[in-house]
Image 1 (cartoon, rainbow, N blue to C red):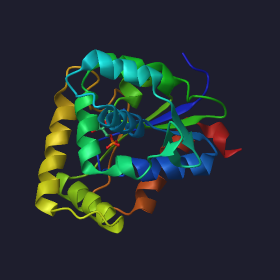
Image 2: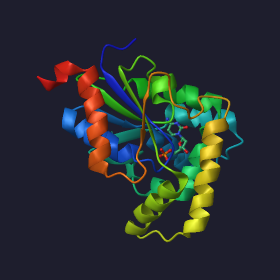
Image 3: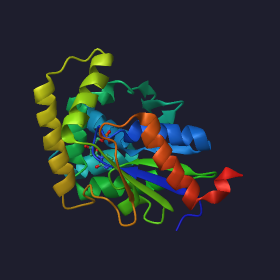
Image 4: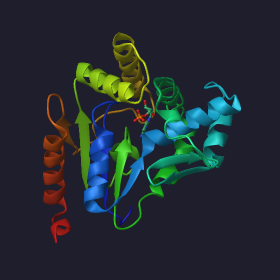
Length: 224
Ligand code: DC
């Protein structure tokens, strides 16, 4: 399909996808697609516009006309910087709900594929390797135990000054995972031929090293 090389990184929330994807894109000098930010931005836009998760047609229409920009690591909606506003658990949960709507996913598909431009793309999400970029030469499925993911999320939120209860957070993560894994369209699952990497108890550098080794093995020209 696409000639531009794509590396997909899928997995549940808190597995470390975002960090690894950013490191990889920086190392390779490739573009980065944080597809979760797209679903989060749509959930945020829907909230602002008073559109509920049940209004599927309105949500799909909103997805098609959303004026969203990714610029220098920031997310802009109609020019407004929503980078931090979309990182809350409330927006994450709303994103997971609307992400189960087929029309919404369809409306965001072309948008995501348009990110694949030379010299290459690192795409992070739930269905990057299975649906959006099925021909990607390198597919990674990154996981970690539910406890560790809850702990990481808790620390991330705390750093940002967002106060959460760790038990409630673990429960919310479990709920969101279950929804993302069992939805009928593009459920979260390891794509065929993906390298499964478990980051539980391992440092970011160690995980990055394993992923990078796979990338260099599959795309040896990158070394030159
Ligand atoms: O990765 P994240 O936590 O920012 O994603 C938020 C939600 O968006 C996630 O719970 C499910 C949905 N999502 C999706 O369905 N498909 C993707 N490719 C990325 C995210």
